[in-house]
Length: 217
Length: 217
DNA sequence: TTGTGTGAATCTCTTCACAGCT
DNA sequence: AGCTGTGAAGAGATTCACACAA
Image (cartoon, rainbow over all chains, first blue to last red):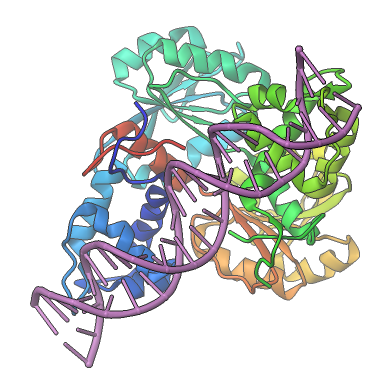
């Protein structure tokens, strides 16, 4: 299950998102050079070329990369050339904000089911989606062909709902709860942890550290 | 300005947050071994020791690290042993959710000023904090000793408010807008980009990539 | 001439393995 | 005996620098 020989590293994947965004912003160019892409993303041009070389060689010497094809290749890799049905678990402050967040739909991500354990919310609807208890998860996953869940519940409930999601066959989880949740190796988990990021920031802002300077990203 | 000889890397910083959290969960131990800390965080024990060695040597062979001192050291590095006054810019869905987010206060982060450009919101109060237009930022930063801002505005407004914040002397910015914002070298910027993380997840879930497997984090 | 693709060099992070402290 | 701290090895990631294609 671990990496074999060749492989796109996770850091490259991360940058692909930025290239993708830069391409949208770059307007109506037909070709774009690694140097221009580097400028738009704040990265080095050699790194851009190295990253794009994983797709096989399709840059044109003297001109750059064909923008349309590049976009297509990247969205193929990122999985944004298709639709993803997502279940949102937890409709508190954060969950509600995420539900209304506009950035998701544009990339083919759509929240099509909502779960919460508050009896006051269960049965109500939000933008046409009925809010269910977590015990409905497995049923809804099957019925609505859900492949991804967003976990926006309190820390102490997170492992429980993640286990339920894994039990329902979910293979992709975006977790906002500030805890280390455990999943089987075959399940993909990405964490977004506000507290950790704030701490990273306060650390940087605090400046000089014991024994030296912090190396910037 | 770049790293000199010794320096704590940004990846180490990131893990310090996890150690910190693990220590809180670890209960009333007096000493904790690198192995135990590794188990709690899912990391390797050698890595834990390497990370903690940046603080100078204070682990006790045969016993482990003194928990109380370790906590103190880590919060000193992370800057969570003090209070941070934060301005929230943008009180939309996400901004409102962040304002009510409980996880911040516990670490000494407190939102003490709120800015928005919606005339319908300006002048109103939220939990005792009056909502101001962005033109009040500099005044409020001075008056309330604000050192950090959270940017939760739409993508196209982000660079503008970041520039304003930088102009007001802010040196630490947590940006939620899904764009690459530019800041002077002396300003610390941390981005939390939901779209990028979702794409990372859909990429992982899409599985085999062109030319090979993805290497897991 | 311009800009790709890539070996080789460099730099950084992680793991190994073990000397030495308690 | 148990566990830290760290040199050295290993694994990756990034940058350099240049042959080569259009």
